[in-house]
Length: 157
Figure 1: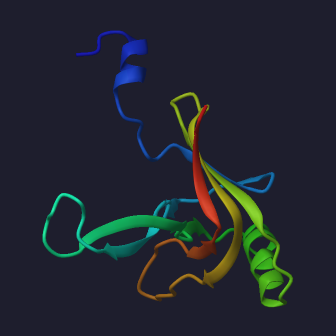
Figure 2: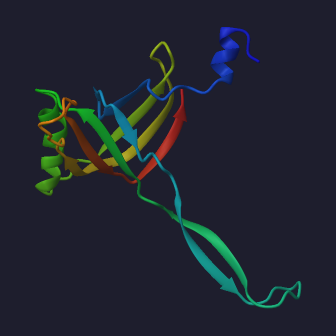
């Protein structure tokens, strides 16, 4: 069991609520980020019987190319920032002037310093969802954006 603050910092998992998202050089406050998945496509090879004398073909599974991640970002709709940051970037893609950007998701410690960063490489918006409107609700308006990217890397600060 950890006793000192330094031991707790090294031994216990970080909470997920303390994060920030940077698109290009601009930090934007999102309430949720999902889809930070890394993986490979798999190819199956079958070869004839091996020297050991085992009957039948031997099956091998090998990794090939990275799978392209789809990242979902959700945030509250805010005057002055939502249209200027997310919609303008999405609109540039619709005009076939794709502006790919690196996006960083940084998990921070209790002091707000980044501990682990996920770098989303060459991301561009592929979908932008407006909030769901409901006259019987008093929830805040949440917009959602999906990004497609080449790949994701993880860095420790």
